[in-house]
Image 1 (cartoon, helix red, strand yellow):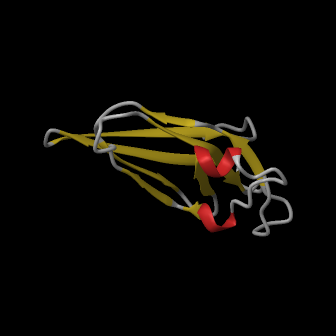
Image 2 (cartoon, helix red, strand yellow):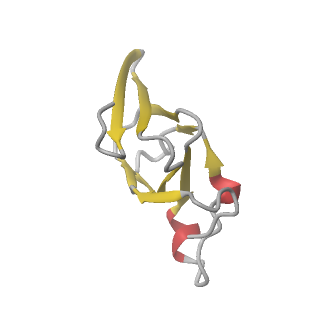
Amino acid sequence: MKTDQFDTTLFWKAPMVISTPADIVVTIEPPHYLAYVPLSVWTSSPSGVDVDPWRTRELHVSPCDDGAGQVYLGGLLLDPAQSCVTIEIESELNGRSQRSELRLDAASTGC
């Protein structure tokens, strides 16, 4: 995994498997980033994946037309100066919305 974004960025590996036919939006608060790439990009980069082109604070995932699951490899690019990381996950299936919030305490200081 490669990034030119920060000299001190921490990478937290967190693969994502989408097996539901829902539209999903994942967001992370600044100064952190999401860095997910399709499985084919991750596995076909023998010298390491450059995640900079894939870096984002909001990721939209829609179901495949054939209903097959999707796999995204990558994770989170975290600024170690920030101890609390907040990630929001919103999904919509058949006109019903669901929202979840995940807080990661990266420094064990309490979020």
